[in-house]
Length: 425
Image 1 (cartoon, helix red, strand yellow):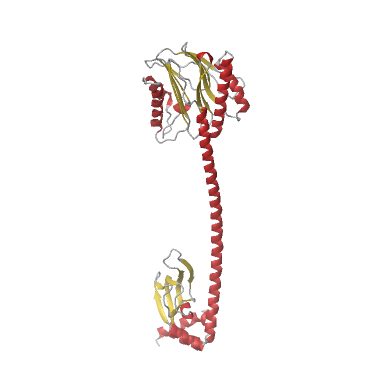
Image 2: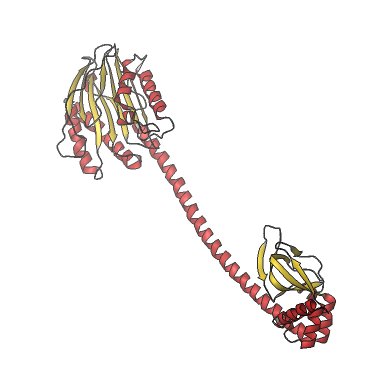
């Protein structure tokens, strides 16, 4: 034996003395084993054997490490362990009856391995019965460790499953709640739409049209046109602060109370729009949530006199223009919204609607519509639209809505849009 081979055998023998499997071998047996084992070198990622294949040898790690893998190449692939220096692998095929590999082995890092064939192993087991017992002890420890890891994995998976189940239950409850809310919102929308006049009354000598487009399923804008005593008509438009269900509830209340007060006063022979809004202000202050208010215009139209008297409570000024598109400048007078103070400051005006004159009531959802760059639609665009003659009040409203949508582009509708147009024929 060369000096090089002798030195290698001594190194291997020293390593084998630290391997539990060979701890009880006599020095001469250990030296014989060290001289008979074959030294193998493998680069990282070398596949030593595959689970299920027949195996007739085990390996002892001299340097580096070998990964033990279950279900290699499948969705369930998992790393069992990495055997390092002084540990052995592949022994199960020598112990089981069918000689099949129970796991796959891949070189984890550049390694030197010692190879022990089944013949060498059987000879060792015959001469040293304690070897088999020691192997069983090692296997028992490994199985116990594997069992403990499996139990820990199961506990972790059960915990994750429990968490996922709880999250699923929460998501399902939220989905059911969301569906319930959507149904309630659709019902609220139907109720709100039912409170608006299904069709505007026909008024001799006048062409009227109105529309409302909520920013959400329900909104806070409203309009109304209804007959009063003496052939007159009440006309209203309003905007409740905020959006959504709270605004819609106050809108429904305000719309009902305004009509009730207007009809009551008209029945008493008064029909003063200012008194109607003052009474509405008292009702709103008694019933509305703190911080909510309403901007509104209420008008009384007398077709026989072609006269419209209106009062404005913090609302947008109506646009009035002649047949040639000339706009009447808005009055320089102030007002405050309904529901803020006990005493309501109103802007009262009178408009003579001669043939060819038109009037537009609108909410700030029109002029404050924004595009993707947050630029406002503004009053200038609206005034330019009304200056161009329209075939009807309905055509005018459609033109304005189309222009607002074109201005918005892909930007979401931020507020309710309501229009009420009156043309004197």
